[in-house]
Image (cartoon, rainbow, N blue to C red; front, side):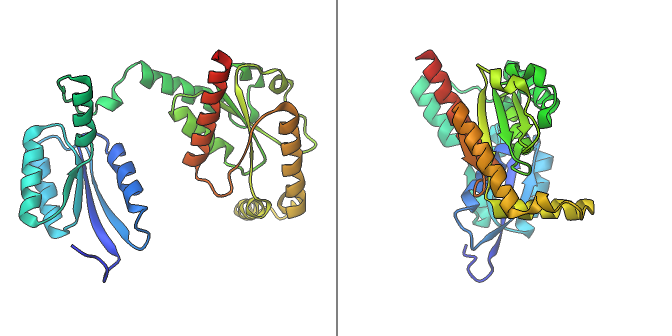
Length: 278
């Protein structure tokens, strides 16, 4: 099937669990075709034939490629058969990885629906990390900063909070501290030994634009210094100089997504741990 005449195309994501894995794979794949826009049909928690038949009717009405994660062999067989009849691509995104792992481990697969979402020790560790991160947002509770895995130090509107939450979802206890020129930072920050401290900066023009929109939303018109590019540039320089004095790495988030920034931070943390144990 070609979609060159119409740059929109349908994609059906069928999962017997939350569909989170499928969603990420679909977005990663579609990003390689920026001239084409997917119309996503998300079908989560599909666990019986009745549910699947309703989905197949929708696929027939709005045909498109199908990505799926289904553990039930009968449901998989029925879906693949229907897609062959309709002439549609149908891809089980986990099967190649599962089969490769089976060969490498020389072990029999035991299918588990939503196994990656099990309420195990890892899951509860993530919940604890989220609790810690929410308690330590925007400089709160500095007395327990030493319990963090990561401390983000950043200027206003440098994505400190969303980056912290993303890292917490990876099980990392993350605190964030605002850097405001003229306002003292907590003494605890300078006594930290275990946590990785990372400075977050961004392009002054970008920060000014974000801050201006924020003030417009709040109907605040009396804070010119907050949105002045030269003042913001001074903030950034001060933060960089502080981080240089304390040998804290700095990440410019201007052209990076939250996920990319977090990946860099995780790499820094892993390297720090290797050095500590090396």
